[in-house]
Amino acid sequence: MELKRDGYPRSNGYDADWVLAGDMGPHPLWLLEDLAQDLELRPGMRVLDLGSGKGTTSAFLAKEYGVQVWAADLWIDPTEATSHIAAQGADGVVTVKAEAHTLPFAREFFDAIVCIDAYEYFGTADNYLSYITGFLKLGGQFGVATPALRKEVRDLGSIPDHIKKVVGWEALAWHTADWWRFQWEITELVDVTAARLQESGWEDWLMWSRAVSEYAGTRDGSLDMLEADQGEYLTFAMLAARKR
Image 1 (tube, rainbow, N blue to C red):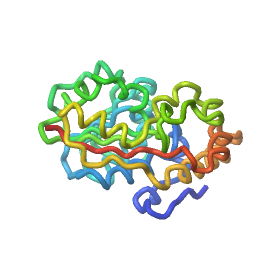
Image 2 (cartoon, one colour):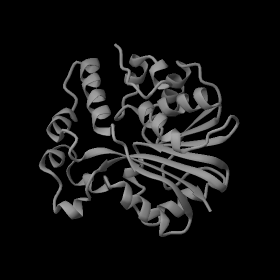
Image 3 (cartoon, rainbow, N blue to C red):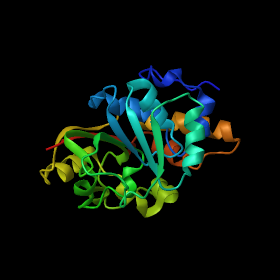
């Protein structure tokens, strides 16, 4: 299967079947490659991949940027993630089973932390930014790609029906980029360097969902939602900051 998009030259070099075998949400390499434009990742850096799933993004970080990666996930066994990562020949990745609120790392250990399509599950809490940035060195970078709506649910007055049917109340965590910017800046813990909506987010997500359906032989659960949306609300927020 071919799964390539203009604008993602690094991701296009990865076997589509390998990426699809690690499916846990919208194309993780497209999201990471886009987000990485707002980060400065250099060889040898210590990077935490938070909510790393089967390790697709962790392998990409190690191979494309030469960084040392700690892949932390609650739901995927480290042995399974290690096997998936090894299929790409990626070196320098440590897989860890960990919950986002009880991370087993030293304070100020990492040069950067990235979180692809997972932060919405725990990062909306007002006090979480303080916790997670405690693991960053001063000046360390924090990057997040998270599902977003183009308007806040509070402003809409309700969750659009086609989204509510698929994700229910959890869509309350799909905030706009402006919401995230305010949420982070008001703490004075970080300097926000990027807070933007991904213009291609809905289209990328739709293409991925169709590929997942073809790969699995069953209709992906997100397809109805995405096709009904037509890009009106659904996209991703790309967020980046440096620890003060």
